[in-house]
Amino acid sequence: MTNQPSTQFANRGRGRPGYDQATVLRHAIDLFNRQGYEGTSMGDLAKELGFTKSAIYHHVPSKEHLLEQALNEALHGLTDMIEATRTNAEGTAHDRLRLAVRGSVEILVAHLPAVTLLLRVRGNTAVELEALRRRRELDDKLAELVTAAVGEGGLRDDIPADLTSKLLFGMVNSLIEWVRPDGRYEPGVIADAVTAIAFDGLSR
Amino acid sequence: MTNQPSTQFANRGRGRPGYDQATVLRHAIDLFNRQGYEGTSMGDLAKELGFTKSAIYHHVPSKEHLLEQALNEALHGLTDMIEATRTNAEGTAHDRLRLAVRGSVEILVAHLPAVTLLLRVRGNTAVELEALRRRRELDDKLAELVTAAVGEGGLRDDIPADLTSKLLFGMVNSLIEWVRPDGRYEPGVIADAVTAIAFDGLSR
Image 1 (cartoon, each protein chain N blue to C red):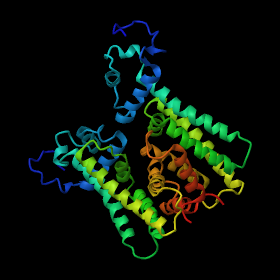
Image 2 (image 1 turned 180 degrees about the horizontal axis):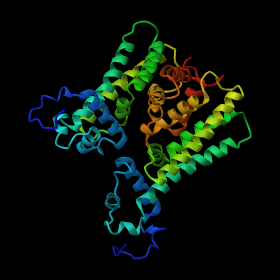
Image 3 (image 1 turned 180 degrees about the vertical axis):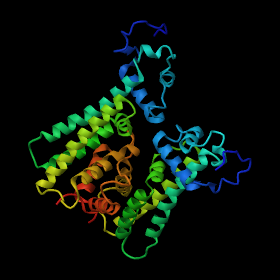
Image 4 (image 1 turned 30 degrees about the horizontal axis):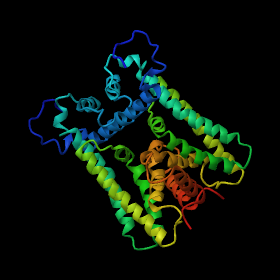
């Protein structure tokens, strides 16, 4: 590994040996989550990765580029899962909603740092505003699933569908506050608990 | 109202005419929630309140003092509610847990900015660490209520009590992401929806 700065940006796509783009991204996401995106400078990122301040720009085009990649990781995972669930012709809307809740828990745990970042986005930059727009699209699709399940008679109809949707996925999203990769409960156990509480309730 | 700086701090307790301590605190909490506590300077607060940078210290002893007051507002509300619920001898543990969930929703909505700040505390200062310690105490008491309700046979026993407690109050706490004082749903409607979903489930 050389410290000699390159004036070309051929390395951008691949990163340097030992620091591929995925590793750079992972470190960046952790920093953004710890310090906030606004509170993280390219200098902080350089320090975290052991680069000099001038070398960092040979590895990372910009801070916003990393944010975009991070938010895309979370958004792609959620979008693909929700599309797969929605276009699954088998079963009722109730079944599909239940699958979407399970799927959301699984994506959240599998992409915990990226989803955490996504759920904390405030909308201060164009990249963040676009992520918020795409999040709203996903939320709308999930709310449509709730409405369809109520319409089919499979879900209680005494709570407005948008309120149900917000509370249901609020419970799912609250996992970012305490779930850890090496935590006490397997993702499957957590997904079972979330769906059992939400659909069947705690009371005996 | 005079701009002449006072060398005494007699005003600290009362604030100035037109800016009582409660108003100063409210502005500070809003700033902390918008910019983060770390990201807010005394200069920002002075600007928000229309004070000069040198005058702000005659109204506010320190930023940390405001944070402490804000976190106490949320913690006192939650502590009093949980104590009242726990020491209520009437009804089952299941009833008391249900009351605690309702009460948590009501406190959250009534003290939304202070509770939002409390739920976002990371523990970077002594004041924050103390607030986190008191939050954990409250969480432990709520988890004990869940365990008692399971023990009495009123709650399903196939989900670990600590997981139930985390998901239940995770759903409640997720309200800070979207509830607004002038929002679409009354606090009572939201509390009904939360308890209906959590205890009775969404499925028909």
